Image 1: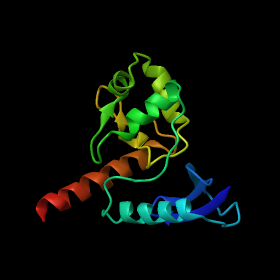
Image 2 (image 1 turned 90 degrees about the vertical axis):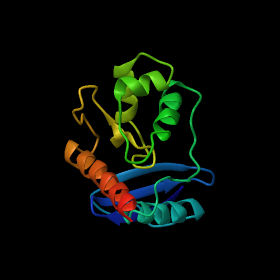
Image 3 (image 1 turned 120 degrees about the horizontal axis):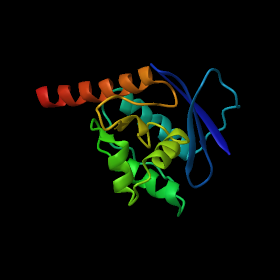
Image 4 (image 1 turned 180 degrees about the vertical axis):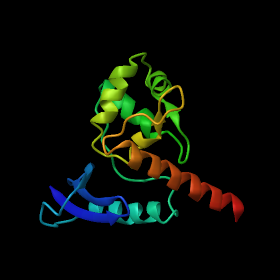
Length: 155
């Protein structure tokens, strides 16, 4: 495994990859693993920097989707456009399922937040809903994307 870290306004992100795929992106309190990166961790750091600077709207990183319900949900999650939100119910439908609670469970276990944008999934009534790193961070990420899109339409 290879490890790297990226510091952003929300905190420290630990990046974990193997030789083929990005495996995990996780907010941590401190540098827990020695830094030993590879092309995937380096590219992830570069793309995260571009995202937070408002210069990247789509991530292009190697991800593995298992041939399971979870994999189908994560693939559908990856298709939510930057700056847009959909409901848990709509994500379930996009995953060829009606299992809204199961979709929520998959999102809670999402090992690659931001890249697989679970922050873009909200409740059907428009409320922000849960986020593994707290509703405040979820709101901040959505606001960041709206501000970036607003600047692009102004320029």
